[in-house]
Image (cartoon, rainbow, N blue to C red; front, side, top):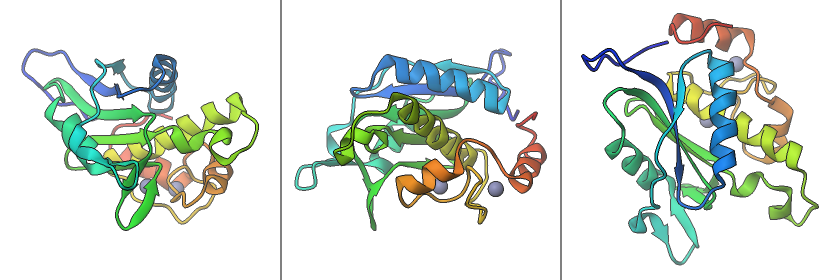
Length: 190
Ligand SMILES: [Zn+2]
Ligand SMILES: [Zn+2]
């Protein structure tokens, strides 16, 4: 795992940070899943408030890059990578919505769980599917933060999700190429 040395020896590879109103349980499960997938030290950070300037009143959505900026401002020096998780609907022009966004250079990413619920589309709730989607999107964005780009393999977690059908097809696993790339980045032990 790539670590940031802050001089005092203490370091966290990934910090999961709830932003705005999102169930604590989501952050807890996400942190546990990321620790297992990336085989690294994952902690949970203090909940952050949604930045008012991120809200687009006309759209009723939040600009994901404005949330990334807040995550970066609040990133502790001993933390290498931050994944924010929120339950507000995100957009990222030219996309009219986004499941998440990552900034590799800044070491921060965010996902929204809002569109991962079956209820959002008028379907009956499915908690197991909801949880799997959260982990899939979380692993995908952390993959970007670590330096991976989109993968052409539709069954790889790094494949771009245009719709939830893409998310459900790919699941949480990396393809052989992305797995190799992660090993090269020295941040992943399968
Ligand atoms: Zn992506
Ligand atoms: Zn791949």
